[in-house]
Length: 189
Image (cartoon, rainbow, N blue to C red):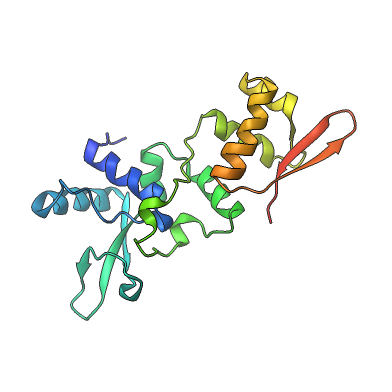
């Protein structure tokens, strides 16, 4: 696997935090030939992809095509995986939030992107473990999640309430199940 440079990590990390995984604007210190070389290498590795830009929505242009249109850059699933964001989890989170998977998203205007919260979930983290448990058809009880993560029950409840519901905007439902207590599930709606 190719090792990421700090510049590539920065570009992909910022793209993961923006709606539509939009990779532009590039870091301020990266301009001219250095920007062209960095982007060319990332396109070659499949970490970035050129897509048509919607100029009316104010999307930043990477290059003009000469026919009055332009292209912009978005991070691909491979690019997000290179920085530790598991595409399977990213698709699940995008699906649960009612968005299109990253490969099908259209880039959005850059105006609100700087304030956007990342939907990035690295594989192997406890947050990813909790999401996987909640995605099971039978869901998961607090005690089951606590046993899996090694956390105490109040920490698990806080993670579901704060990280999953508030921060990621996931729809987590709960119901009382005899013998298991309160069981939480990620709602596909």
